[in-house]
Amino acid sequence: MKFIWGIYNSKMALQSKRILILLAVFGVLFLGCQKEKSINPLEKALASNSPLIKRVMDSLDQYEVQIRYTQINRKNDSIQFTDFDFQVDKNNYFYPASTVKFPVAVAALEKLNEIDSLSRDTRFYIEGDSVETTFAKAVSEIFAVSDNAANNRLLEFLGQDTLNQRLKVRGVAPMQINHRLSTANADDLTTKPLIIYINDSTTVSSTPLVSSYPKPLAINKIKKGKGYYADEMLEEGPFDFSFKNYYPIEAQHGLLKRIVFPTAFSSEQRFNLSNSQHEFLLDAMFTLPKELGYDKEVYYDSYVKFLMFGDSSEPMPEYIKIYNKVGYAYGTLTDCAYIHDEKNDVDFMVTATILVNKDGIFNDNVYEYDEIGIPFLAQLGRELYKYELNRK
Picture 1 (tube, rainbow, N blue to C red):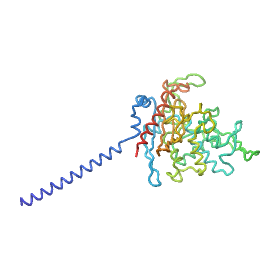
Picture 2 (cartoon, one colour; picture 1 turned 30 degrees about the vertical axis):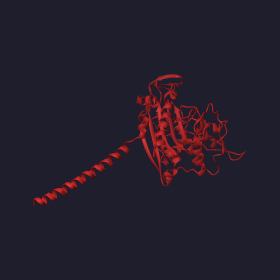
Picture 3 (cartoon, rainbow, N blue to C red; picture 1 turned 135 degrees about the vertical axis):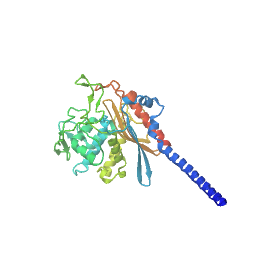
Picture 4 (cartoon, rainbow, N blue to C red; picture 1 turned 90 degrees about the horizontal axis):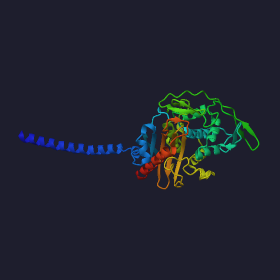
């Protein structure tokens, strides 16, 4: 019995040893996986010692920063997105400014594809406006120099309700575009007629569209600051953004993904753009002002490219293309961008916003765009680009 018991104990000891070894190996693998998963490149970028990043991160509460960064991986013919967020919250309002021109351009091109008699090269002008243009020119001006008038002309073509519905049905949400930009009739619910050239001598007038009255936004941070100017008078109390445009990070980034990588989405989530329209849109998104004939001293390469190059007026490298739309107003800077380095085969997406309004007064045109906001976004882009260059 003692002999048998000794054999039994030896087997038990050997089995226990094997189990311990397996547990140890599993533990190493588990910890390795956990370590790999715990690496957040966005957090790493924001922990940079660069003073351009650090001064914002050291006083984070006042800047209302929100960022979504997307890694892009390819497996066979499929695209895989990995998103990393910093303080992204659709319930924390920020003013989107000119970033709303991106969905306006997309929706206008989609509507054109549904009207046989129109194309992006069709000439038109707005009733009461002396400027004649084309849909293609308006889209190009929106991206090259963020032209407000070009945006407003396309919004007259769409109407607010039609625009919002087109985005919603494709899954680009939440969002609510209520008004035009920097014009006296910004809040008009009825569009002005377009005078459209059918040929060189024949024109037709479009029917005005009437949109519904917008519902006030009821989310966090919808009232900001301690004062604001109205009719050149300083008013005490926070500035109310309840009826302003609403286009949060989630919606901006979602639209960007659908336009750059439409095949990654179901047919219901893709916009109805022809191949020609899609290529035109992508070209417009990265085309630099000088390529459209704008004075390169005034409209330098990074005039509307905040990420990576926004704090420099030097020419951008030709092998880096940035497909983006920026916005800046009321102290808020935002950039929604797909960045592609053709030489090093690197690409990624970033949508980021920051509020720079140290005195807490809105409409006073005293904002720290050049001192803090644009340098922060530029350095953020450089930090993420550096990470992507070294990423396998």
